Image (tube, rainbow over the protein chains, first blue to last red):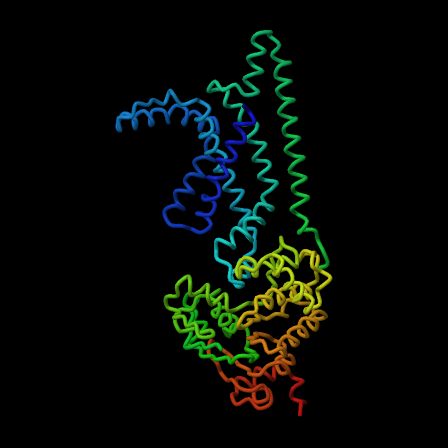
Length: 216
Length: 250
């Protein structure tokens, strides 16, 4: 459950983050203000708050809409974990958009001009020249984001999702060994984190070959 | 054949180009000279719309674009007919030497990987980098990087190659290798427009010299005319300051 929530939130977050970053970099009118507002609000409030707002707020909205359009459908039939996915995707999206934005801005303008000069379209330029380098630059920050999200998923126990932390709690409440149970949970988180760090290091070595210094 | 008619460009209130006309015939090597801020680089960048001119007309081998409202397609077409070599090389840092040259061929011109590779290797050998194919730009010297930049432009077989101060960022020692490559491709009859401060090179390689100052063309003509007997006082001033050795030339 922990891994599932982490993965879905990160993927959802990335899907939100990319357009948000682009809108802000290219200063698209209206959308840009919306994107900035989204980022400051989300980054300015705790992750637990997002979860509660979505978990308690969204069902009200969905039920109201269902009544209005006469659908025979209530929010109670939606599995709780979906609300967790939405809330954490929104959280991850805001943080990741900042990481991606700084990555994109780190790619120098000259290469973009060079791509245009050989006849590439703006979309080709973004996909082939800017994005790969932006991701390479952002890699370390993105991996911190992954770890943060992994640990953040513990908040899901507050809305009765049994991820690692909740499972520890449940087990402990049957045998009263709270300390041992949480130690075990902590070890699992640590293990997962080490794996993420290792994977990051490996990817970094691979994609950063081009940064290995040379003569010039 | 390239025609530029009455191009103007302002940056804010600053008028950088005040109505420039220029025409370049096939196979010509045109060198644009002038002090910093004279608008020569801006003019060059207007030809492939890296800078959008405010008004005027650009025509490259029969394709004419009105600069007031160019369509996306117009800009794309002009860029496909031209290629540029930059002052700061602007190589794609995450791609190898070979991939840098192949990129335009594969993505823009639709070559297959094998064909594009063959062609790129050929061009890279021509600029003397046949042994550096799998290096990344950060592993090369400035002169080598600029030669990759030239190969990238050359491989596209454009109607014209635009050189924007190709040696200004190089160590003095490395200027020679880049200039000799440019000389060699000039001799092959490729149309080129070159913005440079290398006077000796300009004199040897050009078939036509344009002297700009303050956003206008002050004087243009054959290199011998311009370098030995400039008509305008401003040209004489500029040349005497930048190339004292020429006064002993005859």
